[in-house]
Structures are given as structure tokens and as C-alpha cells.
View 1: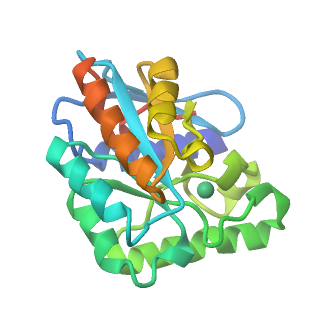
View 2: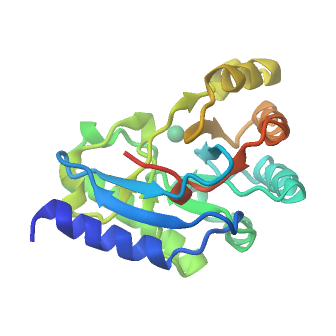
Length: 232
Ligand SMILES: [Zn+2]
């Protein structure tokens, strides 16, 4: 069996087992491999509404993540959190809350390393150590990884069975730390299927994320976790 086909079988299996968290209407219609580079493209039911996924990196934050979870819960929206291994200790309850409330928990490496700048064995260690700690807290191994700086090395698929998730809309929230600017960037760049990148480490990001939810819900968008989106 070719590598692409093995990946397809593994991921199709995982996704068919996955239960949509926040949108009961979402149904998987098909999953197919995209030729080349070992990447997988998943094709989902287009549905009636345009879809968008909010993603948060670098957390969790003891101070800001609970406020964000409160706001998302109030709105019935689920997001995807790519957490750092070094932030897990002391935040176990918070991570279990994320899981309980239907959010997707992904891996953002242990120490926020640039995976294509370090030897493969160290890159695998960064990922696996984080996966193991997430498993200890949630009882589930994460299936998705957001590589810090968007830097992935393809042969990592040989040591970790995970799907890297990138983004379409970079809010630069960590840099601008301005609610209006973040909302404007999303408004200008959002489209059906967009994955939005934010960080649950700033008050401005929490406030902006909730404004973005209100704005896009009003425009008819449906919020999904990244497993409900097309990934390449
Ligand atoms: Zn990051």
C-alpha cells in the first residue's frame, strides 16, 4: 500500500468515528487523498451555511482562556486550541473543560520549536511528549498539530501520525493587540472554509474573537472545529 493510501485509510477511519461537536448538520460525504506530498484533502458536506474555524495557539492561559471559553459557550460555538506542552502542567482542569465543552485540542509542540530547524528525532520528541501529556489529561491522543511558524517537515509523518493544520486568515493579534484591527482583518479576509489564526493569550484577542463570532454568525457563518474543514 502506498504511503498516501495508508494515510487516507488512517484519517478516513479517524474522521468517520469523529462526532461533530457543535454542528449536528455537518456530515462527512467523502474523504480523498490529494496526489503528492502525502497531504490529505477531506471533502465535507458543503451544507447550507458557509463554514469557518477559529483556532487559538500558544495556550492555554490560566487568565484568558477561561474568559474565552465562557464567551464561546454562551454563543454555542466550538473552536480548536493548539496547546503547548509546557503549558499543560497546572492547567489540567482547564484542558478538561475545553474537551468537555466540545472544543478540539491539538498539539503546538512542547516548547514552540520551529520543526524544520531541528533534527527529526528532536522534532518527533517535541510532538510526542506533548501528545503524551495531552493524553494523560484528556484520555485522547490529539490528531492535529499546528506547527509553530507554519513550519513543517514532511518526513515527520513517518514518526507521528498527525495532520498539520495551517491557516487562511492571520489576525496578527499577538502583534497588533487591537480589537478593531483584528475584527477588520477577519472581515476583509474571511471566506467559506477559512481557518482563522488567533492566540488565547491577550484580552484583546478574547474580546476580538467573541466580536468575530457575533459578526460572522450574523452573516450566516457556521463555526466548526478544524476536523470539520478542508485541510491541505
Ligand atoms: Zn505559536
